[in-house]
Amino acid sequence: MWRLLCLLAALQFAGAAPISSGTQLAYDVTNEIFAIVETSCLETARLLQRVLDDAELLMPPNTQSEILEAFGEFVDLVKQIDMDDSVQLELLATDLDYLSDIFDLKDSAELDSEADRMVMRLLRQHGIDDFEDMLLDRFDAALKRIEGKVESYIGGMSESKLMRKTELLDWFETFKNEKDTLDKLSLLLESDYIF
Image (cartoon, rainbow, N blue to C red; front, side, top):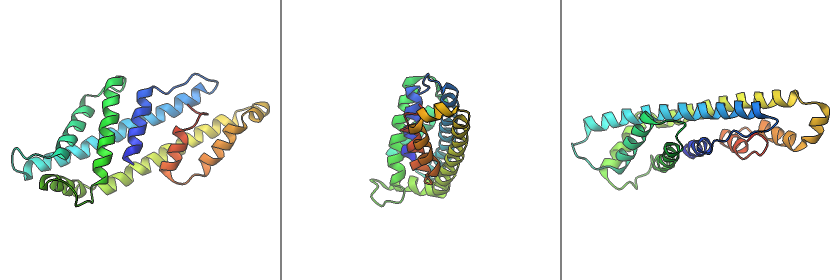
């Protein structure tokens, strides 16, 4: 899930709004993706801020925790990020990648320090699993809206254009039938037909 956010931030960093006959579709899809990335980053920062606040109350002063430090850096970046600044977006993508590695450890006993283990307990107490499920539901809803836009775009094509766009039609059929949210998103991001 968190790698997905990293990919989307990288996509936003790349400024992926191509000029083609489907410019409006590409614009709509890109806006939908950017909106979900921005919302997801803001909500992730809010969750992490709650963990940071609790850690400050519960842990001794000057406690060293790489995880706590990473959470703080992410929250600070999201607070001041300019989504049009490619340098900040690149930092966001890097931070999201690091966070995804951390979140993969949330159930692990292999954490280096007691402080890191405490931070991960706080993360679980603040509902990281439910939060991840909620993000997946939101991505699923965004993908359904994108599916509707692509379907509308295809529905507006002339018969001759449909004959020339068989690869797009095949891709869309695969996209439409994919049930797994992350696989569906991968199909969208890897598509040569939308971006």
